[in-house]
Amino acid sequence: MRTQTGVSASVCLVELHAGLIDSQCLLGAHAEITSVITLCRFDVTHRDRETGGAEMKSCRAAGLILLVALLLGAAADVFPVSHEFHLEAEHLQYKQPSILQGRNDVVTVTPWLAPVVWEGSFDPVLLDGIYRPKNISITATVFAVGKYIMFLKDFLETAEQHFFVGFNVHVYVFTDQPKEVPRVQMAAGRKLTVRSVLDSQRWQEISARRMELIQTLIEERHRNIMDYIFCLDVDSRFHGRWGTESLGRLVAVIHPGYYKDPRSSFPYERRPVSRAYVAPGEGDFYYCGGAFGGLLQEVHLLARTCHRNFKEDARNNIEAAWQEESHLNRYMWVNKPSKVLSPEYLWQDFKPRNPEVHIVRFSGVVKNYAKIRPNV
Ligand code: UD2
Image 1 (cartoon, rainbow, N blue to C red):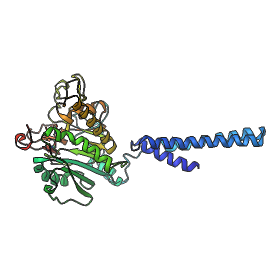
Image 2: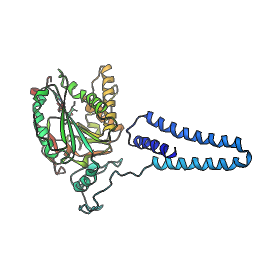
Image 3: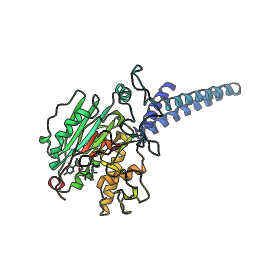
Image 4: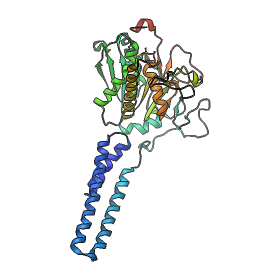
């Protein structure tokens, strides 16, 4: 009984620690521990009546010892050793790390101590060595609605070359034209699923609706799986490695257009009536709506919250300045990302590369908005 309870209760609590289960499971675990405690008590009381005072004390002591042992056992299970950065390949050769040398032209950690990922701030060999044995899988979502279907081929082909190469990747394409989805040769372990969505007369709606569909996708397909998801703009292409260095609980990408500006001039939603509101003296960075990610459970929470707030705004006849990007920025200010990707991870092709950007990994292509959007 002890072992069984210890195991099931601890599995439940470990999952809860990883944020993967709902409160029902926790209640189950709690009920199980409580019922064992009650049984122990009953056992001791029952013997007391039968054997009289002489055995009473020893029974109580035995019961207490059992109870303490049980609680200790459960506690050991509740706080398991974390293996997040466990290195299985002990003989892996990689460059010696240093705390004295590295990037000194950019900041590589936020004030809340989340890494800011720049070229030169991580070792890809080491990181891949850590993550490869874990058999993780990465979901990517991309929307190609209306004329944006024209960007899909390039997006998919370059993703094959640079996005989590050598890992399990599942790309979900949401489109109103499933038959137009190009056939792209995918490596082993990588697959593509096409999902139909309706077109819209407003690009703002297409863009913002993504949060709802991402929320639904995670609910339908990925419940309780501890894997990662990245949600990306289709009018973009990969140029360089985007891999395990980007993994984290909640991941945001710094927008290339504003990282040198004071936060008072960020294009946050500034009307207090909106659920996306950020006041002029608030906010950290301006993040892209075109790329974000993290653990499925975290991104589910983000998408659900942004979608709910977007709907709430709509009920009050307000649409945030940059639709779901505004809601995302509000969310990321309140819920700080655990990893921040530098503008290397979403540059814009029309901008010349700044000197601190040593590599452009992913960038938005130049497009003629008037020609490709359903409305202006
Ligand atoms: C920014 C963001 C974008 C979104 C938007 C505000 C970046 C690089 N981009 O880009 O993510 O937050 O502001 O709403 O941060 N789409 C279609 N069909 C359409 C219109 C849009 O499929 O007719 C999809 C497509 O995946 C596209 C995405 O929505 O990549 C965003 O639309 P956009 O690229 O036109 O938005 P943009 O350039 O204003």
